[in-house]
Image (cartoon, rainbow, N blue to C red; front, side, top):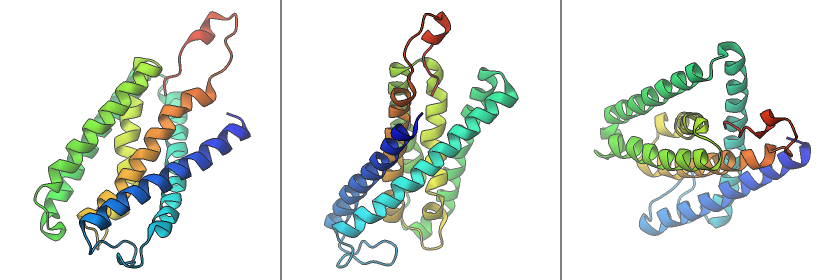
Length: 211
């Protein structure tokens, strides 16, 4: 990936974060007049401030995305068996979903919601499954597990402060996790187009990317 493509991915991901955050925040304000985030109440937390926060979400999402790409590169170099690395990612993904469900179950009284502990993990799983299936269709089946790992584990880690913060609540979790998910989905679905090389006479170059 050259500098021009990286710059395009950078600003476009921030734009996705800004747009999605503004939409999600506006819907939450419309349905809950008491909605506030980062110390701003609904009266002062206007669309411009939502967009600015969304830009930060987009930048943070890209940091997590490139951190995963680095981890993936190092892990494949160390393990050297693609199926073993995929198995480890699949196990970690299932463990992360179970752990988040358990932690939210313990916090259900504080969160004032008795459904979030299973709605969030299942909703994230189904949405991530859809993104991973589409990614595998665009590239190949080997991209399914890495994409699922990114969409679940990385998204949850990026949203960890909101999920496990002392003042966390359901609206704050939704406000952050949906834009993070959207930014990660945008990046992983665009990646293979940015790194695609021109085909050569070498038959090995015809293999599709795994992520």
